[in-house]
Length: 384
Image (cartoon, rainbow, N blue to C red; front, side, top):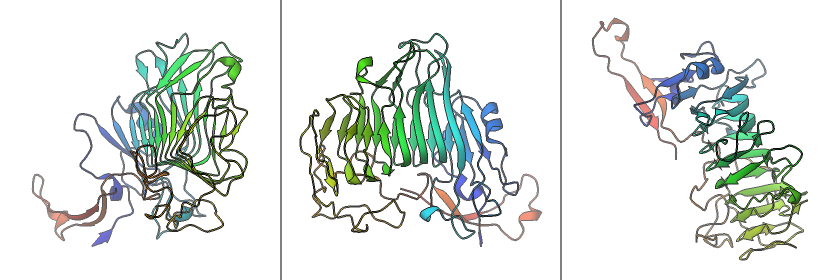
């Protein structure tokens, strides 16, 4: 029985749509795939297709070779091998990640663009959701129904293209590890603006990271009351967890040595049922509203250093029954990443697709005639 480290080891699963085409990509020349260049695969794909991205080739130092910068202006599903495995290890005995330097989602017209794209199981330095096109308006411009799931990302930017107005709605970031920030840009210096509707940031780990409203200053009349930040874990940010996020709804989050302050922000942020520990500030804070917040209380994670620390796959952020965050969220479930509608337990498991772990070929495989039958035995594991 042979263990596979090739692209086949994680790509064969039965839940893919039968109507769209599935493509395979690997930048490892020794791994079987239809493409070795990701942007080429994207350029040849059709809206609704799925692209399965193999583990990045490791360089001589053991670091993943990136797939480079890519641009999507059609609706695609990108599924990688995972964004992070035990504390970044990438030795031959560890699982590997799919690393894309930068992912840009764009819109080309009112009827063509990246709306509906799903990005799953990827490590990326930057994901840019760039709405609007030349002459777009709130009605005609915007990218909607974007899903970023189980990824490890430095920066996620919701931006606009030039001096054009647009609307972003029904976009979701969930079960991700965020290393720097998630940013919402709505510039008052250009003749453009973005409206945000039903944006969900849920069940993520912000590892020293924060949420940034960028140029969404009060003078612009911008309101972020349709952006919902729920059931996240904010770790080790002694400056602030939010900046310029007027009227954002922030619920059911845990702040551990991560100041729940809002820097340079208009008043009116709603804080409900959040828990703070080892912070100097308390919620909801001056000028904000909300209720049910738990201040200065240890969430009692199952396995986490008493002095705090950065995110690690070795930690266990689940909650015992005696935790003050257990079943005390606005919906009656846990505060933090183990509650809400998208509980996050297996932080470094990769995408939620069945994975082939072992494959056995019969000894006579090379002699099977054309049109004959080849019986193959495999073992697969379903990821929760």
